[in-house]
Image (cartoon, rainbow, N blue to C red):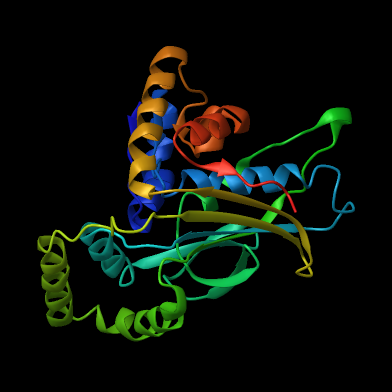
Length: 281
């Protein structure tokens, strides 16, 4: 089994689309993006789909959006990684398939504790894993198939629109070798700064998943809350590795967290690592 905590969209897409079929034929399992990026988002998205069991009416499509926010600082390595991602091709799940689009192509707002928070679109593992889930409840009720999955990163707060504008300007310029060298050098400087998240104030992180019908009407929402994303990643990786070693993981191929372990086990593990579900409003 292969396990990592990578959050870079191009690599995640490569794992699912290129390496996944090879792993499936070989009987191997690939679990990428198995940290704060994007374990809680997969859990929240899966739980929001469970709330659609028996709804909407037959023939009505559903869509899920997930947003992650962190109210305090991020490390230098994370900031350098995000800066690089904005120049790489992104993707979304739209109309029942993966489509290529630039990162931060869209901005969406989510409600967290009564406040609206913005996030910009980003490729993740939810776009691959959530549409493949086959969820059924008591009495044979089946969750409606997903036609659209959007994932949004809310780390930048009020500067989200500026990030979107920078992506729109930077993506075509990033194809120029000279510009790419300058940006790579800037990313290295950010990494060398060794800046860490602020330890003065407690870090709070939120992950929200909203399921809507084809007309945009909200059908269900799930809110997870936790602390420092970095403190979450180590124990959730350790849990995944230990559980896989003890029990095995099936089926083979590139899997999302819910596909690999199931909603209940994943939710219990996330709670043990510091991310738990808020009561439904």
